Image (tube, rainbow, N blue to C red; front, top):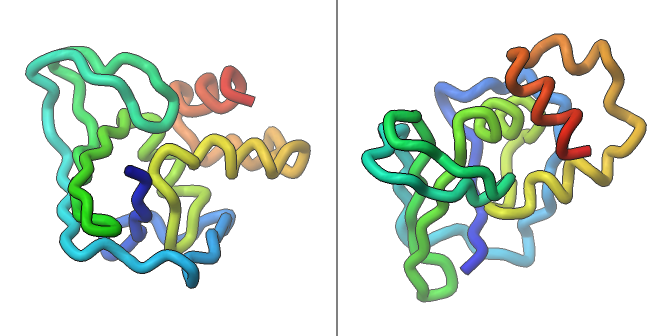
Length: 125
């Protein structure tokens, strides 16, 4: 089940502003997100990379369209998403939205990211 997340308080708000029109999609009935430490291996909902035991990741869960779902996002994808998206994003679709930027991302844009995030962006594009 796909769900929308919302970047809110405590997140980076000075973003490049990819903003998804969520007017056709109601928000979740219930929503909880937290940063946790992996006790076992998981897959990132965004880049499909392995989240290894001991690594921190975002665990977001909620009820969308009457169905419960959980989305696990690696810390690098969280960093990138929080910097580039304003307001709303769809779980599992972040990289597709970033790819649509194509050549609009410049080397100067990458300077705001950690080295790990810069490498991930270059690999994914």
